Image 1: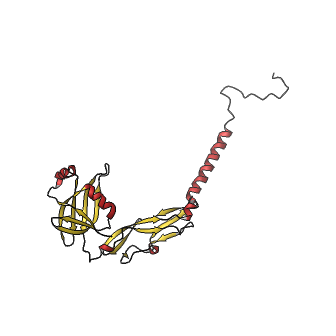
Image 2: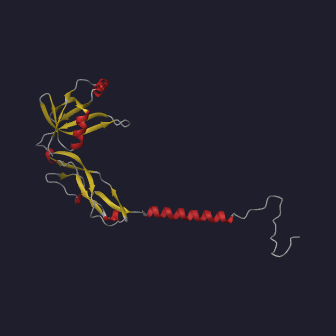
Image 3: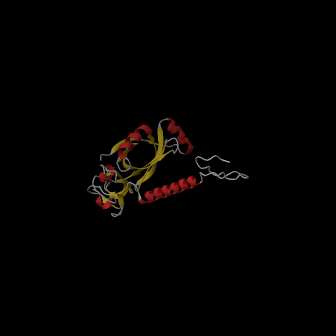
Length: 231
């Protein structure tokens, strides 16, 4: 994936003063790296949103400031939990000739026959895997083809994934990525059976109690046979 350029500014404001940046459509950011002195930056919010949508956390971003160009990865994005406002961004400066470790997201593709036939449902147990590669070889994502999952208990492990050349997977190959679970689990069936038995018992109890007992001080009235007058 080709590096995406992003024009940023060197930032002198720190602490509570960064609020003034947000009023100007900027967000505080920091770039750091093994051979790069940590630098405080200000990033245009709208431009960053476009770049992040394309690059994610594995795509190269070329930071440009003060006649400097740094190849980086977006290592952390802080979002306000309530209003979803962008609060801070961290960039990790990398060397294009040096391998790095990164987490690559997994994306399910295709339709599982087990799901379309309503005999099972997909459970994704792994959303990303750790890999090692040159920054230019890092994939944006790795697709997981679920079209071969046609039976309950079938699964796809890390070993089954199609990994691009130049990428070494560090996550255990035996790790399960996705599996087919029964559409109705045995536990759910048991709970349903218990609920049905309980409802039947309650209905029987209510039916037995429909014969109302006589009020205190009254004697039960005997039924009068048909054709006879009550004395």
